[in-house]
Image (cartoon, rainbow, N blue to C red):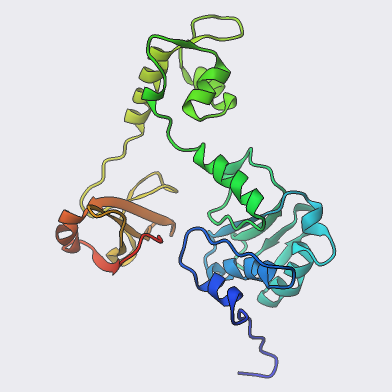
Length: 276
């Protein structure tokens, strides 16, 4: 190792514990100076060799990013050491691979579907808003509405746990309405049939040697057929591995009773907990 080499590593203690965690969600608290900002900035560096990886860091306001000593100032101390290229107008860093990047953004969740795969959040209340927005992206339950009732757009959105904009997009997509003028009235039966048809069309049957890749939106084989088996419930487990086409995470839920059957196809490494 030459004299000019720079070693980047976490401080012993909470920062080390944070960066060593395999949990999907980690909450790192404490007073100023505890290493939280640098911990957040170091977290994506483990993926620096993956040109498809991106990360977004949230703060409630832009000034919390750009203030002296804030995220942007601290990132300027760290990322240039690894060949990062700043795009100040976008509050964004580009990695040497050029395709990957890390953005520092204010609390704007209208475009959550377009966000990168990593979502570190620097504030607990910001995290709560993020979690709520991500939960709203889950599939709506057709049985949440009553077939015999009619709903306005806002009522349907509240009942299904969606935004009014989503309901209006469904109408543009073919959800029938009972009136041509606003406020639209939608029958519960029509909503149920629309959602069931939508979900039937979205199904993606997998063959025995495939996991589902959300980036490719189809079944894919994992790289080298290597997967991690994660225990989810006493009866179910999750197979998880990198897609052999895009490198993204692909998964498949299986019955634990069939684990030995899948072991004949995949190279399985078991993990005892559900911290996928």
